[in-house]
Length: 308
Figure 1 (cartoon, rainbow, N blue to C red):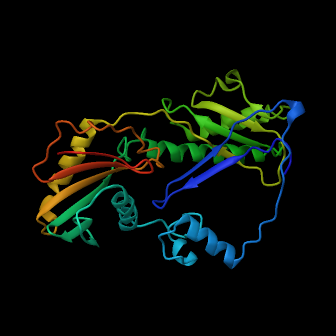
Figure 2 (figure 1 turned 90 degrees about the vertical axis):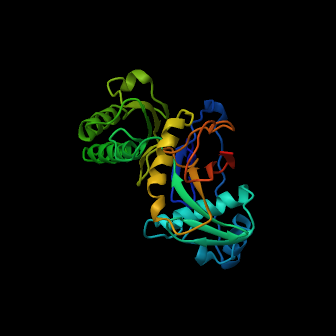
Figure 3 (figure 1 turned 60 degrees about the horizontal axis):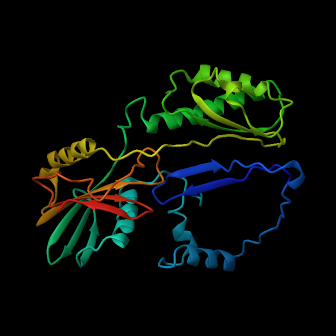
């Protein structure tokens, strides 16, 4: 592995959310790290060991797991029902459900048949509606498209095959992808003699959509440019949660018969379009004429806030 190689972190979860981030670092020139390279023999025994360690409560079948990890050969996007089941299986590990048989379906998404029949409707909690042009769901696609287009424009002029990592200012929304891509390609063309490291803000002040840029000046035959987005923490909006509850209440007339209903609102930590802070008292004053319980569940951390 060549010196100045930029380490990357990849993470994904069973709901199909993926995050890639470069680890920005800098060593003094006299203390450059020496990387050791090992060839890993991926045998059946090795795969079995890894699968069992990653999911000790699973079936142990590597093929079965290929449907749960986006980079493991999954050819199609996950269905909504699969994502809901994935979230609920996480939730039931962190929340003391009443005893009973769990049944997956639709309207509601889950039924627990025990001493009482409890219908549980599941809803993801996005910071903004995905149809809005300024929403994270739309903007993150735009960022990826801009960088891909900028790289293509840059390659057309046969410049050095270095790698670039960018972050965008979330308060400056992308309106014209072609224009932003051309500016980034032009910026890259000025870096032919630059050394590895973070670019000064003055270098790209004329591109307000950008907040960060990092150059890996080592050339690679398959050099790639990528987005490594930074995010600020936000607190959950009770008004937006009320809107979710009201929307689900309007659809309750179509639910299958149950003795009572719960609403499970999921905040997926891995999805930056959802990630937000919740507190124990986040649901104070929230009531429903349909749902006996309203539960907000944040994945990974196992954080739970619920109405009483």
